[in-house]
Length: 372
Image (cartoon, rainbow, N blue to C red):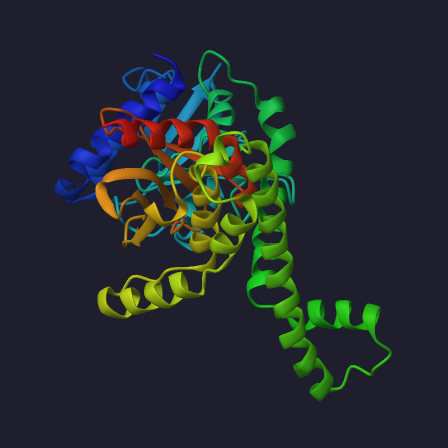
């Protein structure tokens, strides 16, 4: 069994058993030890490979233990600290992991609650564990991009140099993307000032910054919408031959762009159910709708939002799902595609434009639903 197969197996187990786990010890037995064994490939019953309740006295701290130490040639390679499944992972609560990281040869620290695994190293200062993880694995929201990085930590292919060389990029690219997203959603004063001085000679007074804060927000939203619009036109142009069944490209673009009614309906639904429909979900819906319009008329492609996912439907029928957008998790977005047996496969995406990569699958799904 390779690491990816182990992750998939453990994910299914977690879904089935998570709610029945009441203690940290049960979390270790049910999920963490299987992760060490089936995903990382170490023998949890061999003390030469895995040491539970690992102790390494540090200064005045005597007898403190870290939950697991993974060994190689008598040296500690990976330290693992566990919390109860469902508990939030706060690095401030991992004091043993920090201390042991500095007094052993370990270069990898893992903080986990059995569902989410935070992987740390010492990019910021030698032998001092970073405050922020360079890699995050959520077994209930698997990001396929991280799977090759997990494989580098397995017993058979353990390659510390390879892990560390990619850790810096993984950490900072992820952090930069989050910051860019934050600036687009809610521009900071520094960001507004940076752009303001490039387009006007006005002084950066409080009143001017307040004015440009609103203008920058509008510009960011328009920029994103224009990018989506460009991709819509490209997708519709590529599918021009099949589009003859509908009334023309210009009409379809107009129908897709006119999301005002969709936004009003989504807001009304969210007020009733507590579900919040985001602009990203509506933009993603528009892209899927544009792709689906090569197979059916636009008005037949609808959406329903829920707390779990944003569903895109044919004929407003939950049993005729075209795709699902899983945009609620902060760490990773997914598009879900259902096969003929209604089994959903989730694919990670970073940008809305990546939905176009699944255009053929979306069209196949719509054609299959239309044929049934």
